[in-house]
Length: 385
Image (cartoon, rainbow, N blue to C red; front, top):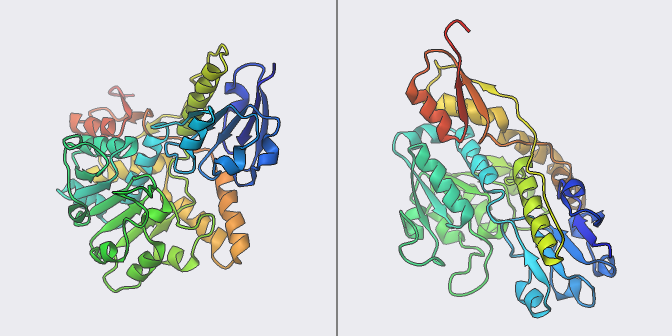
């Protein structure tokens, strides 16, 4: 029997990574309906498709996979009760999000210099991405603290209260969207929390839009002592409040985890899980394509060295420009369609981690340490080369 798969059109690599013999159909994630699943064995989605009884009841779907680390859009209890297998991709986009956060820090004012000089990052949410960010910051010699009330005491190396997090130089949100007591994350940062921030701080949200009350955030940003804010996620996606976009320092269309490397890793995870559920033989490719080596000037300062390396693979400012062009000056429906188009047609973006960096002869070991702290490998040119 042919395995019938319906997938979000934005999940890459399925044509080559699905088990042999699978039949694949694609649709925009926001347009997937129950009628599309009447002759379907497996459904593969990203974050924009709510998967619940309304979508799946009465269909032959036996497997649901989401190519994301979060699953607040999936009714897992209903799936379990119906005997529908479920898989997600925790950690596959973690490094992509971590590099987005580092790029945001490097691109806004002098926050990178301040952190390297002893500043601190506060991390809200200590799941796969929060832990990956803390680890990368530690490799760079940057202090961080984190809070996550859902975790057992002692499971966070440098724990802090939310109030202590909100006193850090940089606050980075990485919690999933939870409405469950006793610690819901919806509007975790509401007016009182946002009022605690000031112009000497940077707030980054690359988690879920509703974690920060966007109406309260707009009011906060209209105050004289407003913090710098970078938003990759928005409370009413795909509808972005133009006034809020105009006030944030950098904005993007929910693409922090959209590196090609992370997407393909997530696709492999789902295909492996699908093959196991349907008892199919499977040997996936692990290749993402080689990247060109990067060259680095040893004369640059440490902050500029890090900025140069990060910008060589990605700049948040590029996505900020595209989002402003897509949203500002457009009617609401057109802007929403443009937001989805930015995600659907997102360019091929590669991660910095794993890149080879060519250093000039005579390079100090200190410079090599900074390069490897970003997850790169080092090749030092020979004298006279």
